Length: 281
Length: 310
Image (tube, rainbow over all chains, first blue to last red; front, side):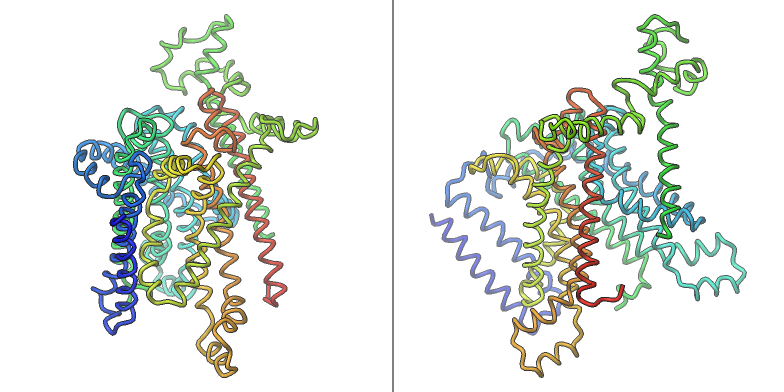
């Protein structure tokens, strides 16, 4: 019971602290901007821990975060093999193949305005489809190992990146293109020096959407058959054998990978599109 | 409508590529089947053929390529086969008055649609509520916004089996609720982002005008911020409903569901019936198209009534 009361008191205190911090005169400084969301996240964890302990929830249903952290520390080796299998072998390779193919396709399509007009709505439609459903077909075609996972990832990331790149290639305005013409720039020079850089904010938008999709694709494809390692494999067998704490540890890995890859993308984007109004300080 | 002709061209090209791909994809299965019926093929025995590329097999057995277009369990079915299967499990069954039979895709589509709509409702409500909190409270903005972004970088499928375990343990029967939770998780974020943008879209001068009218907080919300946010809301609702459908199907895939389009894909996989997988995939695509088109129509109607210029 004390755990529950402590969690509730902590919640109220943290909310009050956040309210005070975000209305204080330091609210624009970076430590506060960082501290407020972190405090919010910690509050969620404390509430979770307190509720599970205070209400006596069985760890088989919902383990408290402290137990998940222990399991995480105890099984780093398993988690690492799974990480390599799912993220490095499956998701990353698929992501790179899909992204390169999508950008190349976009550049090819862009040469014909007719194709662009036809492909944009269709590409947008495909990007909205539940493409994860092809996972069993891909496992059937490419076997159980990472090739089938990469194939699912390629299909999932292709359309969002394609659509965004095609839109981005149309983003440079007439004035800039005219300037390139007065320089007597060739098609490739215009592409490399004006249109691709101008398309970068759009391309990165697509890449950022695709990072999460890549992880989803790689994990779902493992539910349909995989070698005896991988995050999706561990999650589906863990749920079956009631080792729920290990499943939560895998979820924590997936969350960390998703967030840090997204963060990495955002960081690269800032480096590449430093000229863009939204990044100028 | 300017895009209609190019779209049709692209679609025809895609179907053409699909038809061409069927031959190399199915040649091995086709040769196995022909050989079993006693006809001689080059080289004999499927083991001997395993190391030979499909292109050489096609050149050596040109007479049997056509068999690949009519297999019962093809690796890649032709568009016509998929269309036939779709018609058999929807239109043909409806005409015989068996639209709600467990074998009909209309029934499974309805199960999926129901979860999708519940998830969409839940996610939209949550997204709009969070957006209002974020617009009116700086504390909420500073603590919620980063986590809303982080929540979208977490692959929800990892959580899907857990959500189902937890909800069945706390006594929620059936798979409708966990599926709706998953699709709400995927769909609240676009709504949240769109609504925050929309609720902030009125200009300071407009807000000032309402202040000179001595409008109260709720009044300026209902008469200015909410109407101003509608175009943003509809745009994000269209993204949201597609995401909700993806969420429902993801919720059905890994969890051993028995009804719903995702479950049809799962069952088709377990029983080695590719046609069932492909027809379920296509009905999911049709469903997504219908839902987005419906919201698009609603958007046009609502914006026209509000006096927006087309």
